[in-house]
Structure formats: structure tokens, C-alpha cells
Image (cartoon, rainbow, N blue to C red; front, side, top):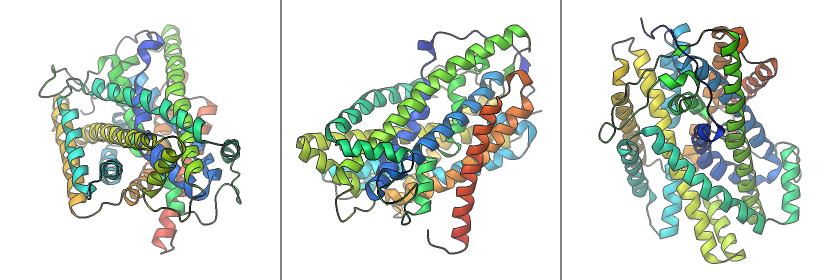
Amino acid sequence: MFPKPLLINILPKPPSFRKLFGPSFIILGLGLGSGEVILWPYLSSHYGLGIIWGAVIGITFQFFMNMEIERYALVHGESVFVGLTRKMRYISYWFLLSTFLPWIWPGIIASSAAILSYVFGFSNSSYLAIILLIIIGLILTLGPVLYKTVERFQKVLIVIGVPSIFLLSVILAKSSDWIALSKGVVGIGPDYLFLPGSIAISSFLAALAYAGAGGNLNLAQAFYIKEKGYGMGRYAGRITSLLTGTQEEVSITGSTFEINPENVQTFKAWWKKINIEHFVIFWLTGSITILLLALLAYSTTYNIHPKASDLGFIFQESAEIGKSIFPVAGTFFLLIASLTLFGTQLTVFDATSRILAENTLLASFDRLKEKHFPKVFYIVLWLQILAGIIIFLFGFTQPLQLLIIAATLNAIAMFVHTGLTLWLNLTNLNKALRPSLFRITAMLLAFAFYGSFSIYVIFTSLSGVKF
């Protein structure tokens, strides 16, 4: 039988906060390069800060979504994918499709390459993007322990990038800009409430999906807390490099613990600590970063006419930063943006490869064994890189176009997995471990929110209405 039945094991005690920090850096890094650096600043530069409420709602919804994903993995030591396969045998095919199709579009690395090409004067960014894809593949392939490689990379990027953006925003934003930001958080724009009439709903939906990780990537949080050793994930094992790592036994099926007063109290101790960890790193740091990047784009480019298309607003932004401070500051901003995008694409490939590898094993119905997981991971990793290269060679090179295609598809995926995760936790977990009414309400609101926007975009697309 596959997945194998859950075994009973000992629920370990939670460690100190210092040892818990890590998984949320990765999930935050998944969002920094797309929504935070590109889409929300783009919308703010064109429509003002009245739309920024969507970013706050989006990252808040994702906080609750991520925590319910962590809840299941904490209790069962396995991902939501495995849990759902126990209830719906063929659900893995949906996750294969809804992960591969949205993330095959390499808009994030296209943006990174476009910015680097602008800085160094390269005429064609497509070939640079292909080189960057190959570099990412080598980093992920040669790092001895995959999780540690990704976690360290994102920690460095966030520690450098977030303070830099904070300083630039404080230096450049005027008091009127800060007032516009505070109004925008509650949906008050320069001449509209919540949404300007001229905004493309697909662009807003794309940014909403990328206020955080986006799509099925939220579900990858289960992998990261397992490899960090949260709860029953302590027994799962880690993916190591086939070339440089020491092989570990990797199990995609988990184990759980006996329900008794002592274990319930231990679970609650885990739950409190990982909520604080995720709130501080993902929600608080992520919210501040989104707001400051949008503020920076608004204060430097909103009053510039004509409005730049695609990534032009970032180049206008860097030029204004250079004028206001000194020229090298504008270049530094572009390098930080490009490096952040590179790091996001690296983390995206790690997350999607984990998702695709695990669901490939689940869809094989035990023809592929758990011991094959690392090999399948690296196969699908390089297949995705190859697909990205082919897309570039066929001429799909506009970064913003690629990002919006991917993000719109990912919003639909989020609508589906939010409902499935809540259903799984309400039906598979013991009553003492299930989400509270408050968290159920938050998940239902997220489900309705992503669902209504997704249905609107699908309907208008099929009807031939331009949006």
C-alpha cells in the first residue's frame, strides 16, 4: 500500500527559538523576487499606493495558509500532498499539472537577467538568463545538503536586501509619500477607493498571488519544516547531493504520536513557537519589505511621465535614486534587485522540484520507491531548467508578461489548495490538534478571495473580454 500507513512515534520537545529559525526565510525568499520586487512596485508606480492593501491582505492570508500546512506536517511528519493522496488517490496528478504549468514560465530569472544586462550594457538578456538558469542548477546540484544550501542563501539575501531597501526608502520618501502609503493600506488611492478603474484585474490578481510565495509553493513549507526537524518531521530525512553529499534515508510518508495530555501540551508548545517564528520572519519582515519597495517605487517614479512599460519602471527608479543620492546608489539598487530575483528563482526551482518529485512518486503507485526521491528531484530540476531555456530560445522573453501568466495560474492553484488543506486538517487530525474557529474563518476567507478573483479572470478570458 502506498502511501504507507502512519507509524506511531515519540513527539520530540521543541528546541529554543534560535534553533527554530530557518524555514520561514525560505518561504519569504520565494516571494521577495516576484511580488515584492516587481509586481507591487510596478502597480504602485502606475496607479499609486491605493492598491497596496491587496499586498497586506495577500501576505496575511498566506500566513494562515502556511501555518495550516505546517500544522499537518508537524503532526504527521509528511506533506499535505501525501495526506491528500491517502484520501484522494489521483490528486497527485492535479499537483503535477498545477505546479509545472505555472512555474514553467521563467519570468523571475528573465527579470534578473534583464536588470543585469541593463547594468552592464548587454544587448540581449536571453542568453544571460540561460546562463543564470544553468548556474542555479549547479548550485542546487552541488550543495551537500539541499535544505542548508537554500536556507543559507536566502538568509544572506534577506539580511543584505531588507536593510538596504529600508535605508533607501527613509532617505528618499517624503512625508506626503508616507501619508499616501498609510492611506493605501486601507484602500484610499489618489482618486479612487481600493482599485482604480483602469487597472488590469489580471495584473492585480498576479500581484495578489505573489504577496508571499504563491501557487503550490506555499505547500513546500511542509518540506522545509520537515528538514528543519519540526515535530514529527524529525524522522523524515533530508535530500543530499548525489555528487557531494552523504546519502540519507528519505521518507515521504510520515509518523504521528499518541493523543494524550502530555503530547497535546507538547504540540501546543511547538505550535506557539512556530507561529511566532513564521509571524516575525514571514509576515512582519515580508509586509515591511513589500510596503517599503512599493513606497520606494511610488516616491521615485509615480510622477514621471510617460509611464514605463515592463521593467522600465525599475530603471527609472534606479535613475531617480542615483540623482537624489549619488549614481552608484542607483546601480547598487539594481544589483540588489537582480540578486534577489536570482535567489527567488533558485528557491522556486528547489520548491517546485520537491513538489514534482514527491507527486511523481505518489502518482507511480509504488512503482517508484521512496529511496528514489533524490534522483527524481534532480531529474525534474534539470527538466525545468531545460524547459526554461527552450522558452527563452522560442522568444518568450518579456519578464512582466511571463510573471503575470505564471501568477494568474498560481492564484487558481492557491484557490484549490487552500480549500484542500483546510479540509484535510479538519478531517484527518485529532480534534485537539485541529484549527480553531478563527483560523478556519481566515482560511475560508482566503479560499473565497482567491476563488472569486480566479473565477472572474477565467470568465472574462473565455468571454473574450479584455482585462
